Length: 393
Image 1 (tube, rainbow, N blue to C red):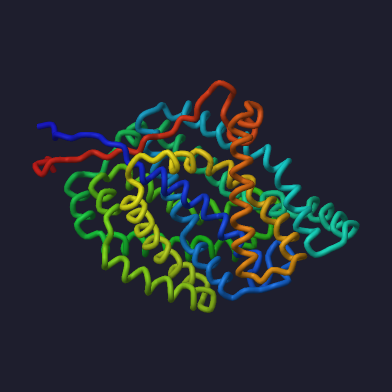
Image 2 (cartoon, rainbow, N blue to C red):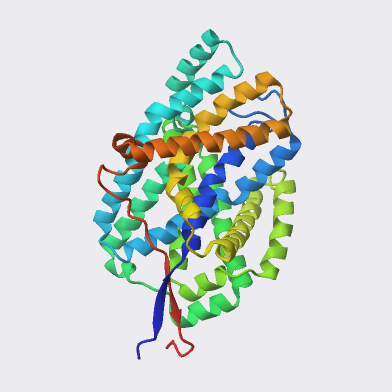
């Protein structure tokens, strides 16, 4: 018997992806006042903004890669693997290369100017550009990791086509959905054990100090691949995904405790244990984020659609803009709280303006958005199968 099902657009997955990308703006603005410094010369430190940055850092990128894995699995179920990979390489690769050579050098120079005179800043800029791989990559590292994961996912489906059609059995899907808190605890513990062991071994081997590794970001690939796989698994588990999108008082309560423990102790304990705690927290916060997005934004909205469309370009441009604004705000002498609000508002406004310019200029839309002239971006429409109670196991 074929189960009856209907399909509907899940707007909240698009919103979650855009929200997590745009959350990089308050995170990076807060880092301008982070105790201990950042890529600018921090003159005024703020403990509160430091805690804000630490909280956002707990879950933003893990949740982002969960969403990325979800959409990758969705599209690999619909399109041939290698053409899909080609489209991803085009869509992500062109903005990555353009930004590496246009935006990153500008933000690095502005960062050097925040604490040095022009001559000294230029000398340091030249030295770091020639010797530091991380100096080249900055906030674009996630695109490198996304390209890796896209290639691995497409390669797996090309070699084993059954993966493109695989779905979790109805019985296991239902069991995992019914016991969502336990399911997430087991998943979080499994990822946490992997993170604690694999990354520690990577660092113990001294591989993270290699100049090439600073560009290739293999440690980030190791760290975020499990979240990408989790997202792909969710896309093939409709009942579990449905449960993930519902608020859970148990998970909310556990999340509050995990956040407190992670913020207070994750950097004070044995590093593998700290990564384990942070992973549990990231998985729990991902569920809270997805359920909140579903409750608030699972419906069409022109404003939200515009934010979703512009989030990628906004993220690319926001770093040089906020670093330039920081130097101005610092010279004015605004207090950290006021400076944070001013820089965040202006960064968003100016980045939004850059998005409008990019969208309306075919050459810029190609270079910074990966969209060829005359083409429209292929946006996956996240869908869910609503299954009747008599679905066969």
